[in-house]
Image (cartoon, rainbow over all chains, first blue to last red):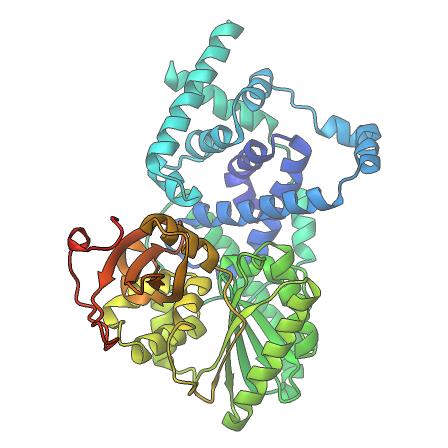
Amino acid sequence: MGELYDVIKTDVFSYALSKTGNKIDAEDITQDTFVQIYKYAKQYQSKGKPMAWIITIELNLIRRHYKLKSRTVNLDESFENMSDNSNFERGIINNAFLTHLLRTLSEEEREIIALHVVSGFKHREIANLLNKPLSTVLSKYNRAIKKLQLIVKEEK
Amino acid sequence: MKGNLKKEIVNAFKEETPDLKSKIQKECENQIQYPAIQTKNNKSPVKWLKAVASVAACSVMFIGGLIVGYIAPKSQVVAQTETLVYLDVNPSIELSLDEDNRILSAEAINTDAQVILEGLELDGVGMITGLNAIVGSMYFNGYLSEENNSMLISVDTNDPNNTQNMLSHITEEVNEVFGKKDMKCSIIAQGVKVNEDLKRRAKERGISVGKMHLVDKMIDSMEELNQDDIIDLSKMSIKELNLIYSSKPNGGNAPNDELISGSVNMNVTPEQVLSAIKEHLSVSEVKDFRIAVLPSKIVGIGIVYSVTVTLEDSSVYKCEVDCKTGEVLSSEKLNIPPNGGPIDDGKHDDRQDQGPRL
């Protein structure tokens, strides 16, 4: 498991971060994803696309995470979270460019960027994975890249 | 520019990736693993494949050790599987039951089902309790809802006389769980004899044996379908299959090992269909309105409602309405002899009709 973690930790974390836009949630989802991979590794049916299998597991966890969150979070809990220093520190994103990226791009754009740029999925594979037309994936990707180019330009 | 940007993106994510290795390893030590689904291994040397394979290999060793060291000595008194129950929504789950209907094992047949079974300790639990937990988890995880209320239940039991009893027992229980959520469930419950051929064909199509058996039955019993439709039917959701199969006329002679209850919540309700047709035919009232599902149209354009409408002036129209959008796809006026004899449903051009312009 340690070996697998070293190889794909950035892929799994960046996808979770792109979907949630929140570092604490992304960490929790990353951890849960690896535990699920370990738990169901024997059920993996090799189709030569293990990363697609892993992302599917992660996506299910993200959906469940949202669902649980929408049911359980109330104002008191939110306040508790804010006053919890350890969580607060865990949640800070140090990289300024990444902070801009998360703020500027939509969830879908971030998702496509993470899958293509970080994990190396082809656009067609992303379209299949997310059940979206290839043209949508391409246009969102190009739009996201343009936005990011602008950020880089402004930073300089 | 683009290359540098990509590098910057990757580095940004890398920089922020936390080190969770020890936490994960600790968590994994407390986890149970689920049995493997037998598959052929494709050759595709990707970095992830190697890594996943190594985890799988470790799992095999781990499970192997477990069997030798712990389970094997106890297995001299292992209970026999008396009944297999397959639950299909999209998550597909296989339950093995002993003669007292206690769950010996619950197996996820697809990834969605892994989510459903996660955290459920079902071994040794009574079937009713287990069903409650599973259906509750399907609802909680969004796989069952007001819109998606279809379930396929397939039972393979060693005692064929018990099949009908099991089917009604399980159906009743699932309906009760749905009732608690103020929802109505549409269920196809069927007896199935699982053999190697059925398993192989189901595996080839990546579906459960229950769904494969239903598809086979549909092809055998519905003259509109033939072997060429297997691929399309296999890809359909349980809701779509249910919609088609429950519209099948059986003359009140349902097989003994089959139980159909409830009705599918359609995307487009019959009221919406009627309203679309009225607008299409430019009429405000109709005398009679009959709706059926046309399975022959499943290839290509999806499921279609076949609707026969009798207008106030006794003219009869046959229309086809898209089940998903409610759009009227076609309509034709049927020739009815003045004495009210049999309808001539030979196709002809709408434009030649005397009825409302379409």
